[in-house]
Length: 161
Image (cartoon, rainbow, N blue to C red; front, side, top):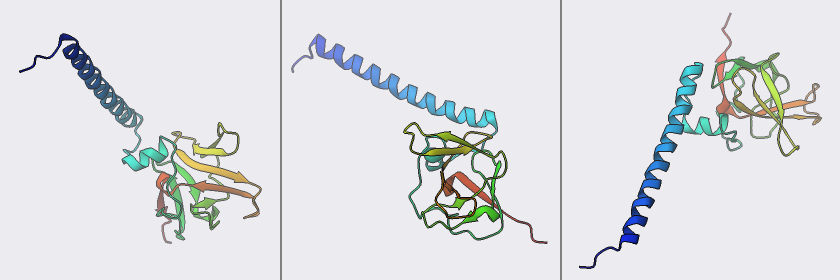
């Protein structure tokens, strides 16, 4: 039976300690995100919602459940429930994501992307990533298109009278 050298044993011990420490740190970071969500009173998000809303991802075009919604009502932030858009401002731009030509006053904040090419839109209340806004395309009289990820929103139907 061959004995393990002292250097090999030391290397293996250090390697295992680093890996276990790294795993513990990743877990702790995840718990911190969940604690922040709870502390702020925000809704718990699924991993896919978090990828888009927190990590500023994008859902695949044409896949969002609100893309073809034609009902009257209000679109709210998935993270904090703040009202963002009304159905009156929604239009079909054929871009693959729900489009709006106006937000509820003060509900959406515009932030220039670091690349200088686009303008990100986020919920003014909680900072959740919604999508991007584009100007000058001529789709509506307001000449504005908020291109929003369905996964970033909930829809509240209008009450029938």
